[in-house]
Length: 343
Image 1 (cartoon, one colour):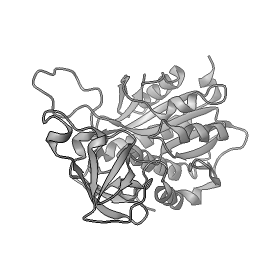
Image 2 (image 1 turned 90 degrees about the vertical axis):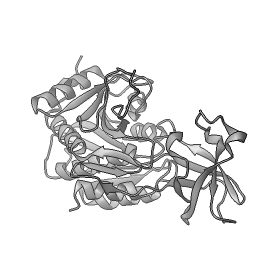
Image 3 (image 1 turned 180 degrees about the horizontal axis):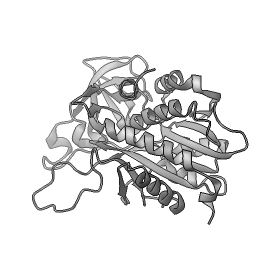
């Protein structure tokens, strides 16, 4: 059975820009299919299934993680490709990045138009300034996705570098959790959702939740660390640190998580001495809000893996943070009862 770090490597290196998650979805199916039943790939591209060890008629739980990554889309195909952003890009990391284009995985490099024509030297360029150099004429088609190239590597025993960690770190945690729950026989009816198009307003999670109809949901993802280098006059204490443990969200951009679940997850972490961090950022959103607004409302909680350089092809994660996230969610499920959701 592959280790969590080996799964993370494979998932990070797979290509799956929003709306074109096929490669990642097939990899996830290969990694988990022996533990799943009722597998469905829906019209949105979500991979959903029921855990074989689930108990019919018990509390219906959804566990979700996003598959897709940010990237680009071909908007015009000449010697240099004009492109559009797919998801949020951090322009600090885009210049001269290596990319692959479309199903043929054509090689290319990001370039910007000359500085004096597009943007001031003291400002970052806009996404509209991006072009792709493929070395000459090419067969790229308008609408094809463009993915950044990231080479997975482990910088030491705990820190890994790679691309797409915002989604793939969460996927690696959920794969490990599925394996650990396979023989657990918890008194829960557990459904899995590896979701598509999370970078496009969480569309896949909404569709998956409407079909699975959970009574409670736990959503995984990666979240940005703010513990990097700071100006000397910046005295703000970092909210999210690499290696600081799983991140629990008390607030996000478009909603507030279920406070009963948040308190339960937090007390479970403390009872098992698992490190956690609380984030109250209003600039970031997760799929938990999307799921919470389905049906007549679903109690949800978001658990996030800290990622440094989140929107870069070279993000950093702590493998111990991934392990902590998986352990905490397993303990949460082991202790979860319908009474916790009572007012």
